[in-house]
Image 1 (cartoon, rainbow, N blue to C red):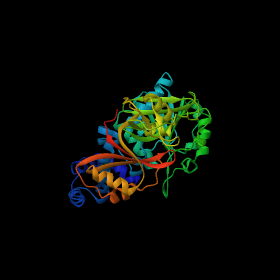
Image 2: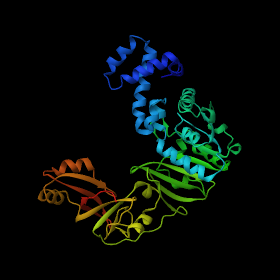
Image 3: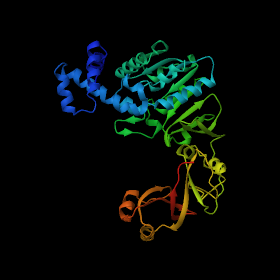
Image 4: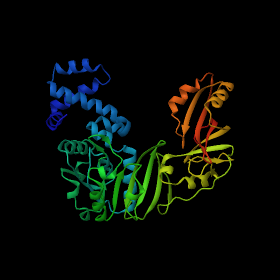
Length: 393
């Protein structure tokens, strides 16, 4: 879809085509295209069907708002989940009053600027792609926040963050070869982002969860956000103190620690339970803090599995009851599972090079019982924990 096709989609006739395409969602693609072509030309038919399909996909990120929003394939993939963007906007509003003026240096299709505008911020946003700018502008109108949003075509490097209360940036993390994990390959590249941060009173920068610590500006706080157990992103905050933070959504639970150095957790013998910390806590190097919450210790000093003697409830870890611990051996593990008639296993691993799918096939499972198999190291020895699954505490 190009800019001309999208512009036509916003006309009354384009809106009719889009509504009709939405009614055909889930239908055979050829049949849907044939039905629309009876009334609309090929370009409008393609644009309407593409947009209707993107709206269906976007429901997972944007909920009911997706039905009136507009997307590009890349913009939808890059965009922030609504719940995460809303969390960030709420946190920002607690940091600064009255509602701030925000410069959004690379707005994409507008997921974050919409949350910021809904929270009351006045947002000036730029993006280098004219189609993306048109989509973000249309989204602001569709969700009723256009009076608080200005979007224009521009380069992030041209933003003057000192003229705003807050700088927000979500640099693109894809190249022509796909997703990149190197901040130097972001768009804009990391030196440009650092320059913008250095001139901002308060900055909020969305980055990949695996960002190396050496790229984080001194004195910044980095927040890792997990949504329903899956780490979605990290956010670098400047102007409000440093340290590390993990946040769980939708519950809003938070763990924090000062500085960039992780606290060493105690190491000890396996207890009755093993706890698997949430990925946000692991990324934030807050495993020791989770171990303290459950009164536990690490099975291995370098692996993020916690063991404890008592069942302690916490949103920060999933708890399993340990039934057996054995050195890793395919033959012994297969024999044990057959002996217990275990035909269904959930396999987890940390610190193990074993291919999970190949192991599953090699186990040749039979039986009606279920178990959790954890592959890990215990004091540097490859080991297997056979566990009963429990509900997350």
